[in-house]
Length: 91
Image 1 (cartoon, rainbow, N blue to C red):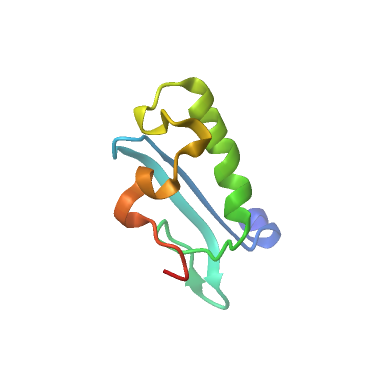
Image 2 (image 1 turned 135 degrees about the horizontal axis):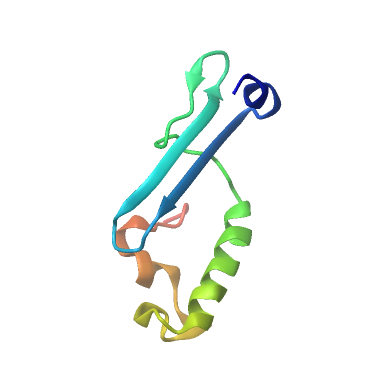
């Protein structure tokens, strides 16, 4: 673990299922130096990288055809999927 701490400033890992069953969440390293540890609740400012993460995830889900919420394919808006949890920064 000492080697991991020296090589990676911080890392959060998680696995979850769609219907709210959480399997595992972990945080490693520091959220802020010198001593604020990362936790599963640590919020990260990922800015524009969320587009690169969301697009392939949605492509996979749309292609699978297993999610009625995505029946409209690429015409589906994010807000219709995650409702109250989604708000644009300028809204």
